[in-house]
Every structure is written in C-alpha cells, then in structure tokens.
Length: 325
Image (cartoon, rainbow, N blue to C red; front, side, top):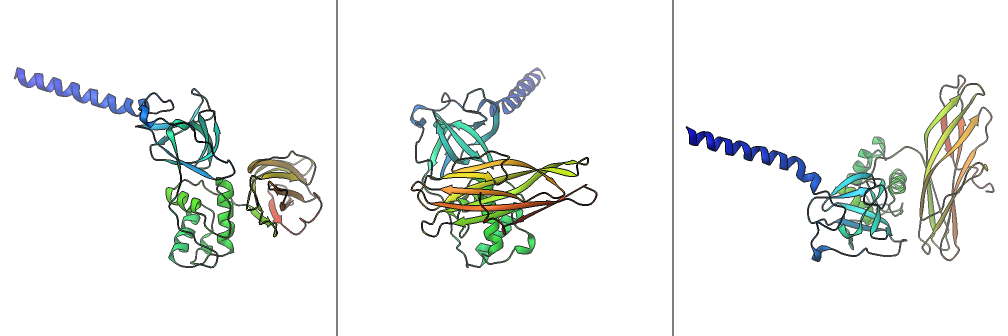
C-alpha cells in the first residue's frame, strides 16, 4: 500500500509539472532577440531595392516571432508569427524589418526572417476561363471583394476590379490584367485582409506603361442637423506599377482642404463636409516614375443628403475627372 501511494504521489507531481510547462513554454518561446538562435542560424539583414516586392519566411529555431508596433525590443506586440509564416518585407531598419502581415504593418527582427526568392504560383490572364478562375473568384468572394452574382468561370471586368481593390488594400504589386504570382501565393497562404466596398479608377501612360490606381471608400461620417450637412471620411489606397521604378505617388484633393501623401504605396483618410448644394470632391492619384513619366487616376464623389438628413448615399463617378487639379 505504501509503495502504491508513493508511486501515485510521483505521478501526480509529474502531471502537475507537465501542465505548468504546457502553459509557460509557448510564451517563453516567443522570440524577438537572437539569444535563442544558434550561431549558424543567425543572419544579417537583407538589403534590396525597395521598389521590388519582397517576401520573407519566419525562421525561428523554435517558437514564434514577435511582430511589434515599433523597431524596439520593448515595443507593443501586434502579433506572434509561427515558424514558417510568410510576410511581405516593406523596408529594412537597422536590424529590424518593417513587414506587412494580413493587412497590418509592424516590425520584426531581421535575424529571424529569411527572404524568399521564388513563390509558387499559376498565372491567369484576361480572357482565360475554367476551374482555376472559378476557384480564384470563390476565394475573392469569401474575402468580400466579389459579389456572389459575379462568380463565374471567366476573367472579366468584375474580377479585374476585385483584384485591384484586393491588391491596393493589401500592398501587393498591382497588375489588374492578371493574377500576379505574389497574389496567387498570398491567397493560398490565407494572408489577405477582408475587403471594403468602394470605387476604383486606373489610368496608364501609353508610352511608358506606367500605371496608377486609386481605390476610395467611405469610412464613416458625422451628421450635423443644424446646418444640414454631413462630414464624411473618405479613405483611399493608391499604387503604381510599370514604367521605371521607383515611383512617387501624390494623392491630392481638388478642394484645397487637405494634405498630400507620397511614396510607392500611399493610404490615408480624407475628410470632407457636404451640404445640400455641395460640389463634387475629387481625389487624384498622380504617379511619376524615375525618368519623369506621369499617370493620373481620379475618383470624384458627391454626397446626396436625404430630406431628413438621417443618412446619405455616396456616388463615385469618373465623368468630371478631366478638370484641372
């Protein structure tokens, strides 16, 4: 009997120790320093042309990699990335990498990211049809970029618009006439954020092939009953491709009530107050490549106020975008 009690005590102690380890070990293995990585696995930050889309894989020895809000050891943790996770590299920053993961920007130690040279993909060009297009459209529908009525087996205008929105909102290289290798891979890895409804305009310079797209959406507003007006926040994303990179993109409002944003990819909200007789609001995305070629895309909005001023409808058009900026 004594022997049996002894063995039961040992077994109970073992179970308790195992339970505590199961709770504490995952947190202990969250890595954002080089201490837990062996010397032969450590690597220096990779530096490449920032105009090229780059992707990396998390290569921690074990555990997860902390994605932080700033390139600092004690910065807020935004996410914990398991070993093997694929992220987009946005920039290099003194031992840290700015990354994009599931539509969110953050920083991670470059020592634990290995750049991927090739991605698995299949390219579907405009006019193709079949099961591959159908599968991709179903994936776009699940993410909210495509309506159920537009799901068919043909690469069409609805799919082109959906791909443009998806790529703009997720920071993937824009090519609305084809499914890019990067986009195909990211769809397979389930790394793309949910979409928003809005308006897309794309323009191209025929001589250089420089292309710019702008996607705008209504992200909320405040109603003012006293003066029968509403302040609406319009968010946008813009991106360029083709031509000679790197690019500068300037996003401007035609009404001189806002700033300008610059960069290869720009995304920011604008606010505008509409009243009963408000004019159109124009948002211009102007892309310039390294040798001076330019392309301009434009989205024009008019907010229609209902009689009781309890709601509104946003109309996006392209008719009047030839007006001077």
